[in-house]
Every structure is written in structure tokens, then in C-alpha cells.
Image 1 (cartoon, rainbow, N blue to C red):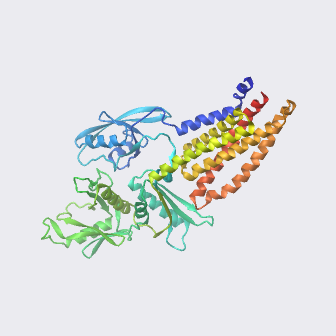
Image 2: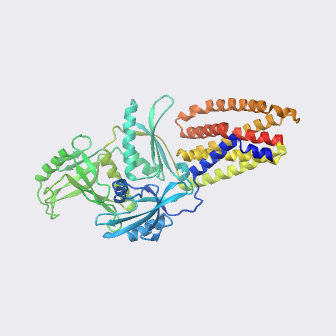
Image 3: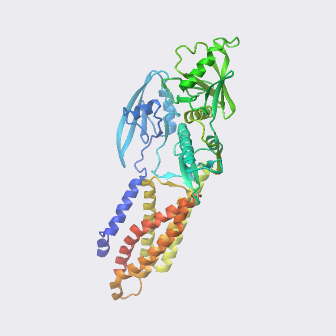
Amino acid sequence: MANVKTALKDWRILVMIAAVIIAFLAIQPNITGVTGAQVLYLPVNSYVGNLSARGIISLGQGSIVTALNGIPVGNIQQFYSILNRTAVTNHSLTITYKNEVFPYIYENGNATVFLSPGISINSSNFQTQNVPFTRLNYGLDVIGGTQIAVAPNESNYNSSVVTDLSGIISRRLDTYGISGISVSTVSTLSGKPFIMVSMPNVGESQALSLIENQGKFYATIGNHIIFNSSVKNETILDVCTSSGCPFGVYSPPTASSGFGFNFGIQLSGQASVNFANAVKGLSASTSNPGYYNESIILFVNGQKENSLLIQEGILNNFNGAITISGGGTSEQDALFNMKTLESIFQTGSLPVPVRIISISSVSPSSGTQFLSQIYLLLLIAFIAVSSVIFIRYKSYKIASLILITSVTEIFIVIGVAALIHWTLDIPSIAGIIASIGISVDDQIIITDEMRRGASKEEFAVTKKRISRAFFIIFVSFFSFSAIMFPLLFSTASLFAGFALTTILASLIGLLITRPAYARLIGEMQAV
């Protein structure tokens, strides 16, 4: 027992303990039971987001809203229910929240905002989620979503075209405020670049419409083109995406409005001139009193999107702003249509058409079921491994030590994933499971080297035995890494995620858990 206590003070054991503590703080399981609605997204140009960006309030992404106007908030359903009742114009809204300043240490805050007419706070500009149990990021194959690989629809293209395309797609998707979207540029083994887009909680059809939308648009009044995305100086300078817009209106769809929406756009100088010249030649409408006899016809991707009436007297104090109107069959459908138009007007057309290389999607329920099966497989794997180890060594102490070391290694790997914000998808989890076998194999090698012979004299060469074991482990690690390393750059994310987690697990084992295990098993055999 004294030897074991001495071993616990060894630097190798202390390093492993420190790694476990850091991993715990990185994963940060919600053991304190904090509840509320955690802020996912606050657009900078929304009312509350603008106050946050200017430093007026410390409420922002990651904050946990615990009460609205003094009414406790326990989850997102309660948050939006209370918000709909209390966020009333010409009244104040008090938001009680807490910000984490260190793991498990929170700083409480209150923000009181006055909602003047034209200001709205709803799910489109104040997105929240239930407080997650851990800080782990799960892939869309676990929580559901769609992943699409796209490339320019040209036979010859270079990396600069892909970079420009990636930037526009990323800015477009940001307009929707969807949390967890990832847009990255990757290359095939031959060096050909393409774009990988991951969209958690987004269905396949919606994801395709977001990606494939070429975004070419123009508007006409009679025979006059007033703005055109293909003409550099005749396009749109800015778009209203929140209430309080200085140059136009912003009215998101609601049931009371019949799921209709309105938002303003700011025309460029030449587009404003085109608009004014076209309107000057119009006459009053006989069928729509108060409006002109021609409408603004908006075309997106060659298809007529909508027709906008032009109010008489619009040129009085005209500042280049006009209002886009539309709707949908439901609030969600109308909001999607509005965001689609906003994103296209904000980013312009894609520099080149795109083609879909591959697309994969998974439903949230399927991902959750698969994750449950993974956990079950982990449990079965540990039971099977512990049984085999016990049969081999006839010692529950050795079997327990091997299993505890393997579990510790997995915990540290998951902690590193949380620390670097690595997304744990199913291939990554499979890689962690595979690393269990590598961990157990290495520990068996160390154990066998330590157990050779039974005389006390043979334990005098402990360092030599450990050195021989670690030589085998080092060779095994570098051989394994040489096989896995090329898969990191594979076009299939399945291989990349699997390769990274297995290499990471093996490296952590080599540097942290294997030396600690060798020290502990050495003391155990010496007793």
C-alpha cells in the first residue's frame, strides 16, 4: 500500500490526474443543474444584438436567460411562451441572465430594454436552446441535419474561385441564423478543391435550396430595368434584416399579418436613378387608387418572384429605399422565403453555378438512436474486454487497472475534443471505440513485460522491461499513424473523423496514460 501511495505522487500519475481535471472542466457536465434558455444567436443588427455589440449589455451568445420580467425561465418552450406575452411595444422588457466567467462560476446580469413601436424580439432575432448537459459539440449525424459537398460547375477552376464561392455561401447561410453551420474548403488527394457544407437541424430539400440558389436577380418597371445583380453599379447596397432599420421597414411574418412580410432594400446610386426615371413616366392606376399603373416586377434566377405596387408620391424625399413584400403558407415557410430573398440581396449572385458532388442527411431521431446504440456497444465492449483480461491474468486488480486506464484515456480524448471544439460525429465516436482495443493491447504488452518471471531479482530490471515494452508501443504507434495520416486528407469525412480520433487517442495514451499505467503496474507487481 505504501508503494502505491508513493506511486500516486509520481509525476506521471500527477500528469494524468491533471489531464483528467482539465478534461472535466472542458466537457463541463451540467452537474449543478443550471436551467434556462441559452442564447445561440443574436444578430448584430437586431435590437438586443445591437445593444450587446455596443457593450451596453453583457447579454450575448452563451448567456443563459433565467427570467423575463421576473417570470422564471426553465427551458426554451417557457422562454418563447413568456417572451410572446411580455415583449410588448411601448413597454419595458427585463431580461435576467447569467454569464459563465469560469467553469461553474456565473456572473448574474439584468438588461432592461424599452420596446418602442417597430421593435420586435422574437425567435427570428433571439435564438436560444436548452442548456446542454455538456460542452461537447455533436455532428449532424447525431443531432440530425444535412451535409453537402459542392464544387463550381466548370471543368476547369482554381482555388480562388472556390474561396470566393465559399465566402458567399457562408455569408448567405449566416443570414438564416442557423446554429452550428460549417462551411469549409477541402481538397481531394489530387489537390482539386471543393466546398463542404454541414447544416445541423436542416432538412435535405431546404439545404439544397440554400446551396443551389444561383441568386441572380433583377427588377423591372415596364420596359425599364431598375437594378440587376449582373451589373456592378446597378445593384443593392444594403438590406433591412431587423427592426429599427434606418432606410426601410422590417416586418417579419406573423399569423395576424396572414404570414406576409416586408423588408426594405437600399438601392445603389445608379439603381436609384433608374428607379426615379422609370417612375417619372408612369401614370395613376385606375384599378388601384393611390398607386401607379405599373408595378415593380422582381425576378430571381429567371423566375418571377413577386410584383410590388408603387405608391404615388414615392419620389417625394426619395432616398433610394424601396420595400420588398412577400409571404408563405405558414409562418415558418414565409420566414424562410424572406430570409432567402434577404440572403440573395445581401450577397449577390454566385460567381459561378455550382454542382452537387454528394449529399447526405440524417433525421434527429435516427442520430439519437444510433448514439444510444454506440453507448450500448461501449458497455458491451468493456464487459467483454474485462472478462478476457480477468481470464488471462486471474487478477481482478490488473483487470480493473487496465479498464480504469482505458476509461481515463477515453475521457481525456473527449475532453480534448471539447477543448478544441472538435465535433464528435459518429465516425469520431467509432474511432474512440477502436482506440479502446489499441489501449488494451498496449497495456497488455506492458503487463506481460512486467510479469516475466517470478523472482525478486528479475524485478530489479524493471526499467529495462518498461523500455522494451515502450519500444514495441512506439513502433506500433508510428506504424498506425502512418496508415491513418493520409486518411485525414481524404475526401470522405468518414475516414477523416475516424483517423483523427484514433491518432489523438493513441497519442494521449502514449504520452499520458501508458507511462502512468506502467508506473502503477510496476508498483503492483513489486508488492
